Image 1 (cartoon, rainbow, N blue to C red):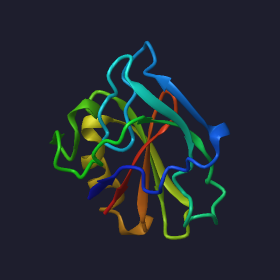
Image 2 (image 1 turned 60 degrees about the horizontal axis):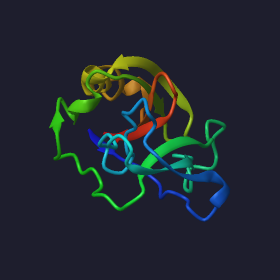
Image 3 (image 1 turned 60 degrees about the vertical axis):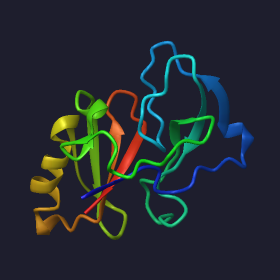
Image 4 (image 1 turned 45 degrees about the vertical axis):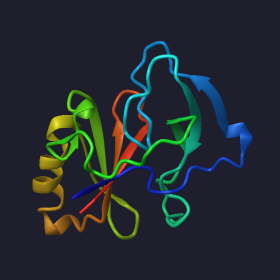
Length: 153
């Protein structure tokens, strides 16, 4: 299995959906490109993002939501940085929601799971179950519901 940050490009041509800001005072805003937490008071962009676009327009699950990205370029997460249990260690203590979709972009399974158990849960309960016909997973932060990353087998 592989984690894919921002599976579609961030649309920056619609300025009404982008806000230049600093990391919220509660901190812990994860950049969806590098998957690292943005430092307190660091410049970030708060962007409306739809992880289904542009290729998966044919699903009722498609819809935008807010995500943070560093204002300045940062390296894309490639699975080799800070990776333990198949997921960045900073995600281990987070509550994540896995939403599993089939080839027709229809949700076939979902579950709230502790971050450190995510990849094992997906391996055994999702990609290990041929009846699900799982094509990909969108992972969201459970509390705010923001898109975190995509997982592919």
